[in-house]
Picture 1 (tube, rainbow, N blue to C red):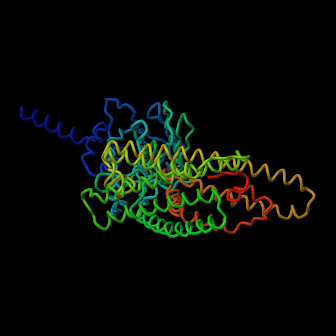
Picture 2: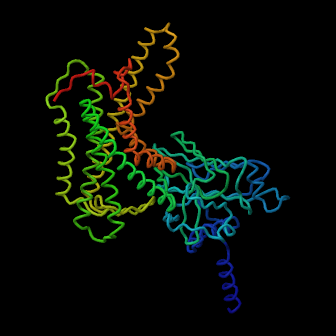
Picture 3: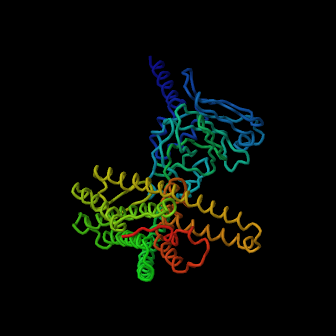
Length: 524
């Protein structure tokens, strides 16, 4: 009996020491560095008689390329160069290839501020580790599955021939990006695009990566901005807004002088837009610095007022931007004997009255207060709309997303009409003067003037706001959007300078926006 007991005990201890494949994920996930534990144990595990679904562990010839299908929705193609590099011994002809899918809930994404390079991280892992936060992404894992691909016993990276991984999805999705998992020492990690290229054909996504790892496809990825870039962008915004305040005041002075010397309705519209833009940049600086200077934890009445003032200024800016487009339409299309009684007064009722009505309604709902947004990209604190308040979310979406999109789309169509008109006028003028030598000599100059006119109108009509779409796909896009929109006051000043310098004797001056006022009679 004692002998039977000892044999049984020995058998149980041996069974517990066996590295079963079905237990590797569960046991390794108890450790902080669970992916490294998984990489170390899974190539030598035993499958036993129990078949594991969606799991491939096999020996492959390193001199030939390998292609496996862990599931019907995933395909892995590994070139022979990758298999040869994964060998521990050059004389070894066969290497272990592992390909399986893991539920994405096992991967805990770290916050950007918690990402710190570890001196021992690179030694402990078999994958390349690149701590470049420009490549870090946030998003939802497509299908909720992560594709793990491991081979051999040596790290595999910087491959001349990339590994191809194909993810098939029956449901059509947009903005899909290939990423791999980069684990940190605290048990969390980040998704990175380093070394991976994405080819999205709609029905499937093909990832071409130069290393082996845990791979996934993120849907609607959110670009992550580290603390350094966030600080740089904040300084650019503050400096640009301060410059806009100064140059917008100078623009108002120029417009007042022009209005006294040559009263025109177009100059009056420009003055209103300059005033709205001045209020916008000034209120933005006040809202940011009030929280920074006083570091108020509660929502005082000053912060409530500043949030209301900023929202009113933003709405007024977009309203007057839309009215600039409306006025441009009247100048270029409806050019014969237009008479609108008290024209500027009616525009002012819309440009200033509509924002006032909106903020009064929003103020009665209590949406204004301290905005404290801590997301994956940055941390923002300012006087704006309260963060965790349902009416604020609805108001922000309608007034800062939907309404600006409508204004930008409307003005973009009008700018296209301007380009079409200029093209037609230049064509007719060219046909009438085809034999004139001076016309041919001035063609380049006229094209340059037309380009500058269209560029100035783009800024005047608020089209740089449309660059907000590129802030979701690239870090340079965030910088471009921040620089252009924080310097709107500077661009408006340049336009006012152009107004003062334009020549009244230019034959085609009636085709440009600032001098087109003589084409119509818009009277008070």
